[in-house]
Length: 547
Image (cartoon, rainbow, N blue to C red; front, top):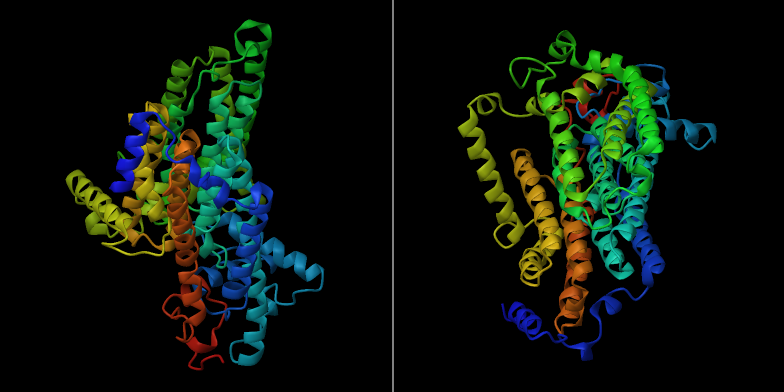
């Protein structure tokens, strides 16, 4: 409280906090932007090698085995059997990586038929070790690519490179990214693609341009691709339209090209035509995904009004309302608005067409009915108790999330919780200083993170889910710091920043180190292996344990 009082007093006095101590941002980013990015990636690589790649193959065998098994099936010419998430892009990337390594004569265990039987324990261990390590390499490369993408977008969201590199550091060493760096999970791609979509929309919303509708198409396409990897991405997709609204500026108005005239309406007409063609191409996928017979066969029950496809229309209406609201608030012309709506349709349709790469109707059913699929993981009695029960659960979830954010009342392997302490104070401070737009931006981002985490509480808010909401917290912090860089002059700024760096590094590596030091035997997957990996016989499920 003394620290906060010092900030407020200095702000009210209109004086620099304490320039004699130097700028904390300079001291916290000694390597610059590019150098800092190299150091961050090098640290992630070292952590991956020490606490991931060489870990025994049956550690974290849950999703690792499911993804590897389905990649084996595809390379054998068979069909996938896993559609729960549905994990589409993750499985396809591992399949393609296995095939490439085999063509380069670097991997023999690339198909199910190439895996020795479990009765030959030594040969099985050798083959599965090489396959799982190859798959973990995909996880590491994917995480590295996503960190680089976040870095590029962060640099365009904030004006100060030092703020950007701080945000990149927090993102790369967040609990979720560090866990996904070394295991095969579906949340990483799903969450990051939606976050990148949000960042693209923030960039597009701040300034009018000729290509803004194309940026919207790219963002929507990323959201659909994220949904194709994990249905939980629908929670971020629901939040994004509202989150973008306060990010407009005085330069958000349409440029002269879009202000009516033949050129503007010709471009809009072309966008509508492209959208119609893309939608027509995706329509068979949409029809198959919303077919009641197929959805019922997949074990889904309609969520609203006893019919499939009802709330999806509501979602489309929500997106449209937010787009029109943004256009009205920030003076986007009618011609550009029409082109933008067409771009959204085209982007979503093209994203759906990605399912054609390795088509299975089960993917379309899961992707187009994400909430129904999520409800299959909820206890049936609680799912049917009515609106009041749902509101009670949501309120309970929010309280549990806030409890976790304190870290003191409920510790967790999530270093971003310490950042939330500063963000909550920062929102209040920004509002007092007249930076009301930045305060509103950060407040909405934090509200979305809390709401999504509250829903994740139903499944224990596992560390893997942090990647869905930590980026929202990080972007909120970046927005506030970029608008109030003078706080870096306070004499306590550097000690607090350095403490956060140490905590972030230490807590982010706690779970990976725990995984390495774990001495328990093979993962207990014998209860579900016959369902998810039926043709892969595991030695320890047949009575003998691997070495």
